[in-house]
Image (cartoon, rainbow, N blue to C red; front, side, top):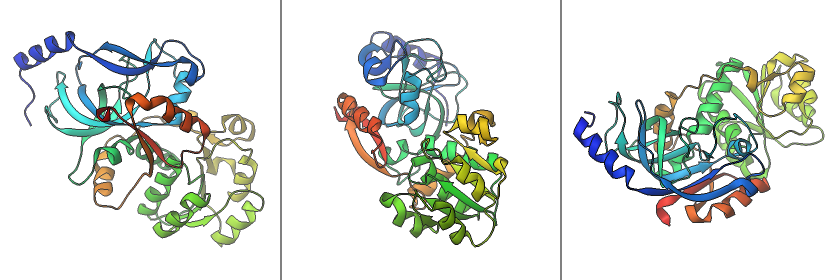
Length: 330
């Protein structure tokens, strides 16, 4: 599609300069409940290579809480809500693949902009068009889970014929990783609680529970050498057991959470892996989602004004799926 002409952009920017929006952000590092607040701020402009959207849905993730505590430190204030879906309402220079009015999903620029996706409007740095049949809530649940899971499976080198253990398949990244690995032709064993065990089995994974005896249960399910292990669960002291499952080779285990154990035991950690995310796969997996062939479970949706209730549930560790903010519902 053709991009906006210069005069249209100028008119749009002039209107933006006179308008404000709601956003959730923090001015100091600390515990999320203490440092986050909703503010009324000027609507940002879409710079070169970026687009601005009217946010229809925004996913909340553990990384949002980590940002508040100092992960990826940078200039403050800073917003939360790194994945979203919405309607394009402005495009920056050099953007030619979308136009005003297009529905898109992707990620917010939380580094170069003082607000992110948990807002009425947001600046996006990576996006794809939403396929027909995919709603805004489903779309907002995809970007982080898909891109992070895909990247880690690539880092591990998961291929057709491999036997892969996904530890923590009840997390949204783990849930996505199971599906992606199965699509790649891997044989997948998943550890998960009761919430998603049946759904994971229906997808084709062999599933067992956490806790005592997990090594023996996984070994029995595998019936052969487990080639690779992806740890997507919260820190629980399980890394030595995962190394045992991987035949004693710590380099066949990749964790996204227990970095201290990784450093001590020689396990690979996501902080040391290639962080060049494959945002291009979002188009493929959003179409899978629209076709009913891929999903990231959504637990609850909330109006933007109810963000503190969503935060409380997120911090409880019992969300049981993605939590989504809906600014347009206020």
